[in-house]
Amino acid sequence: MKNISRRSFNTKLSKGLAGTAFLSSVGLGYGFSPEKEKKKLGIALVGLGGYSTGQLAPALQDTEHCYLAGIVTGTPAKEKLWVEQYNIPKKNVYNYENFDSIAKNKNIDIVYVVLPNSMHAEFSIRAAKAGKHVICEKPMAVSVKECDAIMNACNDAGVKLSVGYRMQSDPYTNEIKRMVKEKPFGDVHYVSSDAGYISRGNPDQWRLDHALSGGGALMNMGVYSIQSNIYGTGQNPISVAAQEFSSRPEYFKDTDETITAQMNFPDGVVGNLFTSHNANANRLFVSFEKGWAELNPCHSYGPLSGRTSEGKEIKFPHQSQQKLQMDDFAKHIMMGTINYAPGEMGKRDMIIVEAIYKSIKEGGKTISLDLGDMGIVRA
Ligand code: NAD
Image (tube, rainbow, N blue to C red):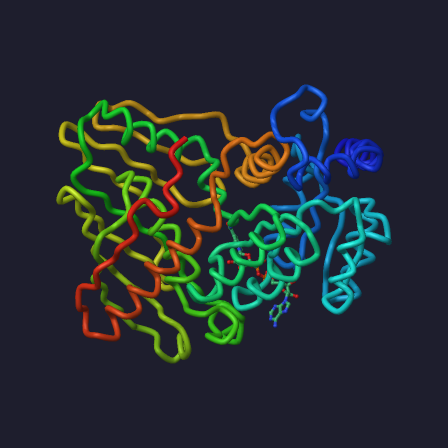
């Protein structure tokens, strides 16, 4: 009840302010002002599956700078449920066919694409063409080419783009970034990051269907390991070599089950990646010259947990990562603050994903990468 009444209030507030928020969001006046800070941007979720239902919609009841304004779904039965549960006006409800008419809806500032991976590019591009800012779930797309197409569409439309990398707004992740930058234990020499879970569900689910997922464990969980290798070193890798393992080929018919990869970073820093749909793994270990830091669990929704070689616990009050992530993006749009997960970061990770698949295809060959500082966000 508490959430619903707060939402009703937010809806009323936003109805009056959405027009001006949209103007500021498309570039007519960045810069902080107390008046702008009070505004909330309207988000429309596209795809009302597990993540939208279990994480994003609940988080949007607590966000300070955005709210759940609309939905886009291909399942009529879900419309009624969501409209009732979240008090969403009927005029803010779309399906995949009439989605483009969202362009005319001033209550919607941001479209959040939460569909199977192979649908990210189409709906992100349609959202950009409708003049809406875009959050695209991870992995950003199923190829580098598609990432380029999304980025170009957003640039052409003059809208902002972010990837659903909730970890980039998480305080534990940011504590590791701080240690890498401020060097309390000296320079990083080695990073190891694991992300996986045991998949035993329906063998026909889209995550195991290459046409919809673009790949298996690497696409789904491996991007977390790529991300934490990079923020755990503060640099992009200069090469990668990878291996694939399969123990349940009858279940993983179409997608990769387990992948390991070794990355070289500048200055001789070594990174190790493990990702799997057949092993539970959720850890980051950063080895510095004079100590270490570990997050375990590292990539889940929290509460996370961490410690250092000094025996000190890394601890922050638990907050919804999704709330932090969506508020960070709304602030970026309204106040010009940092975009913690820009499209360039999603594209960079897809370049690494493609290099890992290439290495596996070529028998573990080392693939050189020329990423420079692409997608590195220094807060
Ligand atoms: P899900 O299977 O629970 O939901 C998928 C949604 O897409 C459903 O509403 C389904 O009806 C719809 N859909 C439309 N066309 C479809 C098709 N052809 N096949 C299957 N479903 C179709 O998936 P999810 O867990 O909500 O994941 C959606 C996206 O969110 C994925 O890209 C996933 O990687 C991402 N995700 C991110 C996080 C995170 O922590 N950032 C967590 C979970 C999922």
